[in-house]
Length: 221
Image (cartoon, rainbow, N blue to C red; front, top):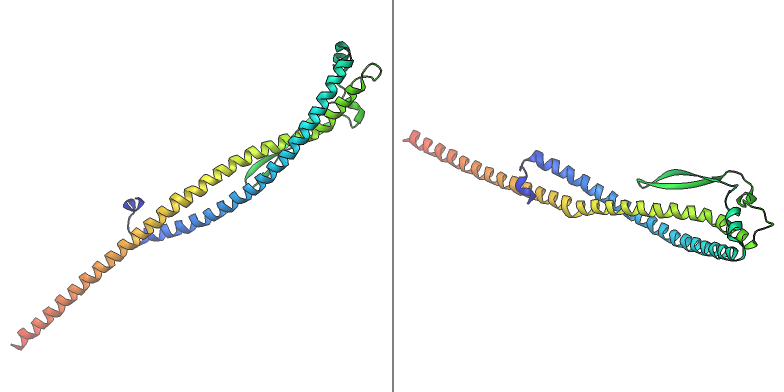
C-alpha cells in the first residue's frame, strides 16, 4: 500500500490534500476533454462515411467511363490524349488545434482557373466517354481531398482519445484512491499520536497531583 511509504506528519497531510484537490480537478477536466473529443470524433466518423460513399460512387463512374473509352478508342490514341496534361494542382496543408489535437486542413489551387484546362487533348479523335471520365475525376477530386483530411483527423483524434482515456483511468483508479488512502492513513496516525499524547499528559497530571498531595501530608505531619 502507498500509505506504508508516507511520512505521517501534518505537513505531508497538507501536501497530500492539495494534491488530491488538483488530481480531482484534473480528472474532471480530462473527462470533459475526453467526452468532447468523442463527440467530435463521432461527427467526423459520420462525415467520413458520407464522403467515402460519394467518392467511391464518383470513382466507380469515372472508371466505368474510362473502360468505355478504352473499348472505343485505340490504346495509342488514349495514351497520347492523356500524355501531357495542361492543368496542374498544388495542395496546401494547414493545421487547426482542436482540443490539443493538430487537425490537418487541406486546400488546393489549380494552375489556371479555366475549367476546360483539365482536358489535355482535342475532341476530334477522342470519345465522349473519355470526357465524362476526366470530368468525373475532376468533380470528385475536392471530395477525395476532404476525405483524406477527415480520415487523418479521425486517426489523430482517436489516438488523443485513447491517451486521454488512459490518463483519466490512471487518475480515477490509481492516483486519487492512493492519495485518499494516504490521507486516511496519516489522519489515523495523527489521531493516534494525539490520543497517546493526551494519555501521557493525563498520567503526568495525575502524578503531579499525587506528588502535591503527598507533599502536603508530609508538611502537615
